[in-house]
Each structure stands twice: as structure tokens, then as C-alpha cells.
Image (cartoon, rainbow, N blue to C red; front, side, top):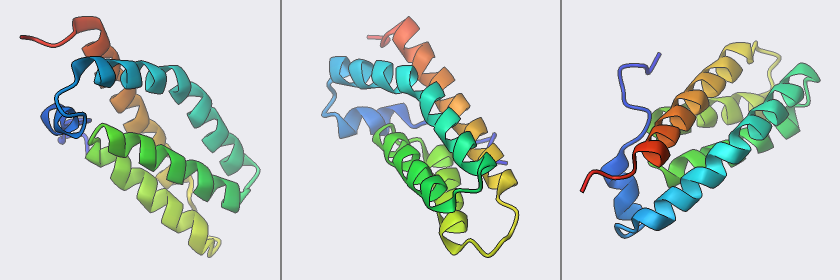
Length: 120
């Protein structure tokens, strides 16, 4: 579990967006809006054992999480993507759960930033 690590590195994320608070808030809002749908797609691919689709969905989530310097979510998604690509019949359920948990943590962190704004 990566719970001890913050869901994202806000200062690093702000650096990525050249300190543009508005841009970060806009992209955070889009991420929050889409995250439930993205996780539903991930779960559906897992349930149907569509490993190529699962790898693709994990890859997309990894890219989204990377935008916000959300290292735990990036790591979890990368692990799931690799497992789905290897497809050695191993149980990928724990990796799926980890991705879902980390994405929910990231979504909660972004919702908090949207609600609170930036302390100036």
C-alpha cells in the first residue's frame, strides 16, 4: 500500500503547469468529471478479462495521473498495465483494486483543491 505517500505532489504539478492555477483547476475539474467513467471502463475490462483493453485503460489513467504528479496512482496504473500486457494468467484483481483506490485518492485530493482553491 502506498497510503503513506500523498496522493499527489501539488507543487510539482503546479511547476508542470508553469504555476498556472487556472489551468490546473480546469484540468483537475475535467479529471474529476471523467474519473468515474474511466474507472468503470477499467472495471468492465477486468470483469470481461479483456486484457488488451485493460492495458489501454490503465495506460490512459497513468497518463492522466502523471499530469498531476500523482506518483502512487502512476505506479499502480503502470503495474496494472504491465500485468495486463504480460497476461500470464496471473491474478490482476489486486492491481485493479490498487489503481481504483489510488485514482479515488487522487480524485479526492483534486476535489479538495477545487473546493478550497489555492492558499495565496
